[in-house]
Length: 270
Image: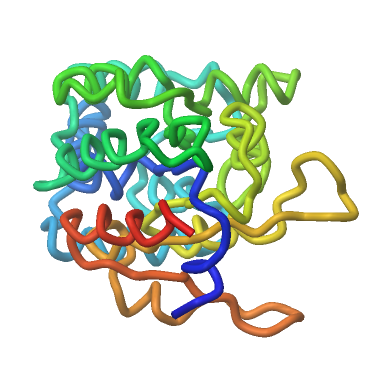
């Protein structure tokens, strides 16, 4: 039994969206085909080849900009006035991502189990939040079509990061920045040690380590769950992240959404 299993009960759960809740990798593949067509070009890579290629480019300096550059497609990730941005937002709105099978039930089960009970030690319901660099405008329809918006208490999205940064450059706060999770902890009023972060990439793991919320002298590390069905897969997630203090690993790695709720249940009681 791990330390986290016997610590105080869980106070909050933050979930990534892309590759964790929504099947957005398929849409990314379709987007590059669409954007190539809009620019009188072609993007013929199969989805099977696209996934490892895309993930490899994302791990290199420059991130998703590398994907556009390698494809010969116009994009400037640092220029919000570039035509790629409104086109991409419109494409996402018109092509909502479906949920991974079992994810809606996992969200509902977590929310239901986190309600107040006869236990006097739980005097606040479990809070749930979305943590994503997407815009709220683009993911709201996807959450609404699955009827899960009401199960969440708050979110940190592109709009929130843009407002927080104050210079309309939220890209400086994208993952693996810890700022998003610091904002999440404030919104749901939960300590890091009693908050679970559910994501599908090593960036999600990195963002969960030593998050400065209230006091820089006392950073907080979240409970982490890696979703092997997402962008990077189990093999990548199992490697963990090497740092000065050693290698950080996910507290849990799960292979399908049905496994998420049982993990959460472990932390709901002392």
